[in-house]
Length: 265
Ligand SMILES: Nc1ncnc2c1ncn2[C@@H]1O[C@H](COP(=O)(O)OP(=O)(O)OP(=O)(O)O)[C@@H](O)[C@H]1O
Image (cartoon, rainbow, N blue to C red; front, side):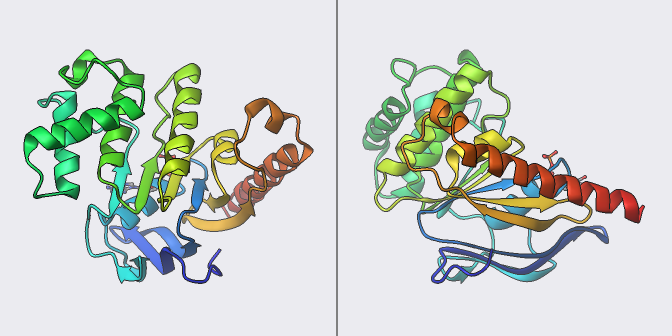
């Protein structure tokens, strides 16, 4: 997974632990500019931790994370993060949540202009007429749309997403998957995306490449290129033998890792 030349994001020999317990070991990943990488793995394999390291919310024990060639030394607006649970400021109206992100990207912009741009971002994710509401007045799906609008408003070259649709019902989940791909494809240059998920089908629907993590400690046990042309249609994917072969190969990699751990126990 480390062979990509001129990678926008590069993780080198990364190790990380909490209180002496190894969580991530020997992680080497390179993600090309504009690439959509899915991180897939069982619960506890360290997917969120890896994303937090890329976001700069944690520091590596050893090794390093390079974003656009520079070592990550903390959180930054170059790396927008979307978590599962919406991450909106509850005390701010939805438009101000997004306008605040606009102002992070463009600090010289006044609030009125930032609000106008924020309304544009909200429209783009299909949220109209709710700008003046507070987050608690929105459904879960709408809050997650607003969180995506907020992340997009940062206009960051990197978009880091941690199971962003995990809490949504299947219909909203499918809508937001489509929306994410649409906005990702529309941006020039495309942001580089790292997307954490448990869901193999979601990874194969969205990503250009899938990195599979094994557990105890977390490490990359397999990588797969996802060959399907875009736009991708769910029905066409389910009818494609390569989709089923990839699913099978990912399941085999995960099973082999689980068995190896059981044998070692
Ligand atoms: N703040 C923390 N302190 C100590 N251990 C932690 C902390 N955060 C996570 N861990 C441990 O690190 C390991 C990896 O957790 P992480 O949340 O990164 O896994 P994950 O693959 O994202 O899991 P899930 O799919 O369930 O979200 C787990 O064993 C977890 O208990």
